[in-house]
Length: 161
Image (cartoon, rainbow, N blue to C red; front, side, top):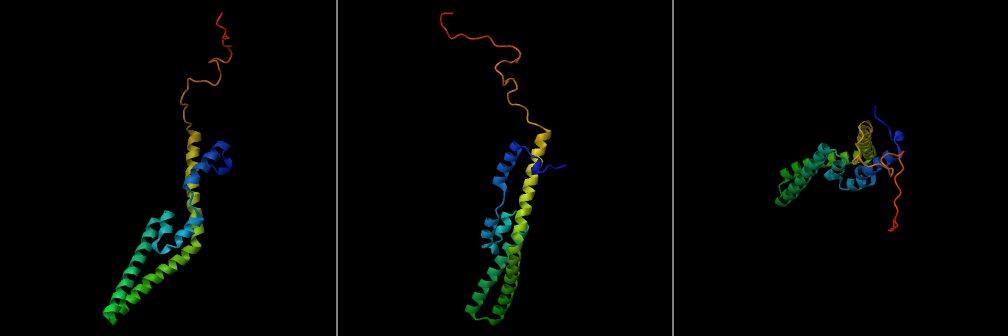
């Protein structure tokens, strides 16, 4: 059974917080990346690689059709201009709708990813509880004497003795 963060000791909680600090995703940063959302950057950041690639491809097709439309308007080909206008609008509109939906979905996506990260770290802490790391220096003891019942001989710093 997985442990929760409320069952952690102070040391384990510090370990969880230090691990999460480097791996936790920021909601604010994700929204900043959404400004470049037509490239799918925010999806790559949230480890949603396939959908990030699809957004990037949609953007690239939209831009290709835009430049082809511009080229066709220079050449004055009305048939090609209409085709590229329609394709540009289809791809661009699909991308725009997806970005608007992402605007509302981002908090949930960030929370899910952070919860998954925390669950993974908690499972590692639980593993460490069940399989403690052996002492690095087992021959050292915390008391001054290897046997706590034996009093060590006194050492005199006087040179005359």
